[in-house]
Structure formats: structure tokens, C-alpha cells
Image (tube, rainbow, N blue to C red):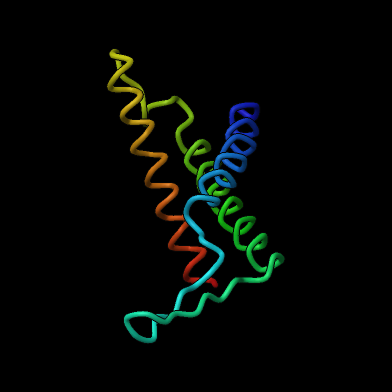
Length: 106
């Protein structure tokens, strides 16, 4: 059980970093008229801390889910396709919840 939680924490942290690269832009665009705009880039340390916050939130939520699901009842199924779909749904819920946490704290 402990090994499962540790593996879940490590893998979800790494996947959280990779997903965070696609979710967070690192810049904002202000449009003034039809032809003029200004791009404001975030500083590198601000962007990195935002990515780390997101991946830490993903990791903590995944560890909580893995801890409560001791018998693998959440994604258990006889058919591998159904098990894979359940796993994808749980992963998407973790990413969405982590995004809401990071945006709310930031």
C-alpha cells in the first residue's frame, strides 16, 4: 500500500509538470484596437512556481485518492477498456481540481 502511494505521488507530480506546461501560458495579451496589442510575459520564477504549485496540487490529490482507494475499487473492472476509461476520468478530475486550486490561490 505504501509503495502504491509513493509511486502515485511521484508519477502524478511528473505528469502534473507536463500537463502544466500545456495549461499555463506564461503571458497575457491586451488588445487595444483591431490592429494593436501588447504582450506581457510573466517572469520565469513566477511561471516556474505556478507550475510547481499545480504539480504539487495534482500530486496531493492523487495521493489522497490512492490512499482512500485501498482495494482498487475506484477503477476496478473486468474489461480493460472500461478500466482505462475510469482511470482517464479520475485523472481529468484531478487535473481540473488542481487547476481550480492553483487559480484560486494565485
